[in-house]
Structures are given as C-alpha cells and as structure tokens.
Amino acid sequence: MPKLIPASLLALGLFTVTFAVNLQAPLYDAYAAESDVGATAVTVAFAAYVGGLMPTLLLLGGLSDRIGRRIPIALALVLGAMATALLVQVPSWTSLVIARFLLGIGTGLATTAGTAYMTEILGADRAKSAALIITSATSLGFGGGALATGISLAVQGPTLLPASYIALFVVAPVLAVIALGLPRLDMPRPVSLLRLPVFPAGTWMFGAAMALAWSTTGMTIAVVPLELAANDLGGWTGLVIFLAIFVGFLCQPIARRMTNNHALALGFVLIPLGFLVLLAGVWLKLLTLVLVGTCITSAASYGFTYLASLAEVSLRAPDDRARATAGLFVYAYFGFSLPVIASGALADMLGLLTAMIVFASVQLVATAIIVTMWRRRSLLSATALEAG
Image (cartoon, rainbow, N blue to C red; front, side, top):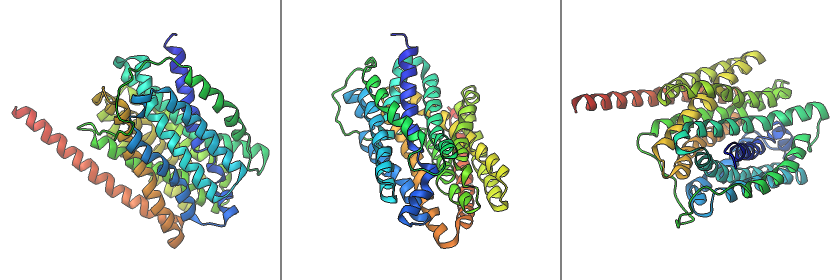
C-alpha cells in the first residue's frame, strides 16, 4: 500500500477524533441553562476533558507500543461518537462533564499512537513532516467541530441535535473500522501496559510554551464565549473557536521552514500579544478586535509553538515517540485546564471581564519568567561550548 493512502486515512481519523472534542462548544450555554449552573460549572465541564486525558497520558502514553497503533485510534473514534450521543440523549451539565471526560480519554489515546504511527508510515527521516501532518489534522479537527456546530445552529435554529452531531455519528464508526484495517508497521514490544510519559532532556521550554499557549486557547474556548453571549454576540462563538485553532494551521507551513527554537521564540511573543488584543475587544465590545486577537493567539498556539514542540520532542526521543508525545501533552493540558477553571471561579466572584484581566496579567508575568530562564540557560550552554 502506497504511503499516501495510510497517511491520509490516519490523518482523517485523527481529524475526526479531535473534531468531536469541541463539537459541543457552541452549546455550552444551553447545557448550562438546562442545569441552571454558572461560569465555574461550565469551566469545570470544559476541563473534565483533561480529567480523562491526563491519566491516559500519564499511565497509558506507551499503550500503543504494546498493542499496536491502530486499536487506540479506533477506540478513540468510538469514544467520540459515544460521548456525543450521550449529550443528545441526556442534554445537561452532568452529561457534558461525562462526555468531555470520554473525549479526553480518546484524545490521549489517539494523539500518542497517531504521532508515532505517522512517523512510522513516512519514515524516521521525515519526522518533522509527520509532525506537520499530525498538527494540521488535529488543529483542523479541534477548530472544525465548533465551526460545524455553529453553522448547523445558524441554519437549523436552536436545537440540541445539530447536523454536525449527525455527521460524526455516520463517519466515526466507518473510520474506526478503517483504522483497524491499516497496515501494522510498528514492532510489538513486550512492555508493560502501564507506561509513564517521558520528558526528553532539553525540551522543558517547549513544554512550558505549550502550557502557556494552550491556556490561552482554553480561555478562548471556555470563557470568551460566555462573555460574547453576555454581550449578545453568542452567534459568533463557533467562528471564534474555529479561528482560535484554524489560523494556527495556516501558519504551520511557515513554522516548518523555521528552526524549532525560532518558531518557539515567535510563539512566546504572539501568545500574550494576541490575548491582550482579544481582551481589548471584549472590553470595548468590538467583535473585530476579538477576532483579530483570536487569530494571533491561534498562530502562536496551534502554529509556531505546537509544531515546534511536537517536532522537537519527536526528534529527541526517536525510540520513545509515543511516550515523549504524552509528556509534551502533559504540559499542554495542565495549561489547558487549571487556569481556565481558576478563571471560571474568579468570574463567578468578580465577573468574566475581571477574570480575563487577571489571566492576562498572570500570563504576561509567566511568559517573561520562562523566556528569561530560557535565554539564561541558552547563554550558559553557549559559554560552556566555547570553553570546551
């Protein structure tokens, strides 16, 4: 089988897994209203995704080394359809929590196995190309689900069974069967089913950057829509979430032509800049600034930072790519969840806008500290090389 066919089918499978993750985002306020809960509850439901994903990364990041790459990907597709079906059958905040938890497990299984599998399909000498395909497919999926539901609601009107859900129910089972039929290219290893992630030496700054970048994306997906709805702009939620990820996809070819360090440095600049522009748009109630800020943060999160980080850990752990990918996502999803939950709690106490201002302030300080540490260590390493 030519490489193009399994690579394309794998990319489509990973797109569909991540498509399911934010599919329900434009309906967060509807599920919250069904259960009469506030911003804290919404962000807790949003972060339940990480509650399923983190144990999967921490304990099962190397599962595919034992059972093969195909089964985890097929299982992730089935979990995505099951989680969405639960929301249709029992639309409530509780169901949203459970669904997000299942989606987290699926994402953890698929991204670790998929990254290693794509590199095996294309060859170890094309590790950066494999990373580009993975980041492109998952970026489009994360953003495409929210946009598809947003469009469905615009066409259908208010409903808890948008056409985007139906599309997932049709496609996911088919792709799960196809995934099981893909060629097995990995060599099974008699390793423990429970395997902790690994953190390759010298990649801490890439993990820290992912945490910062994805905390911004988490705020854009979970908290910003609540503020938009409060300002009668809720109809734009799907587009905002789509832009929060899609623009990053458009920037990935540019990031690929840069060194990983240069792409990371640019990401550090764009992360706080984008959120400040977005915050200004929310403050002034200017949708244009909200969209521009979202695009800038997207370029940082899913463009330069995501590709550089995934490529770097893959290159530094050629014999343990699945577990190294799990280690990177541990950083990323800590950022994706904890600041968002804290901001939701703060929003219930002081208001959404105040919570966003506090988040922006902490983000600026954290970025400055990490960049200073990175620069200092880089200078020390350069000095040691010259002395040697």
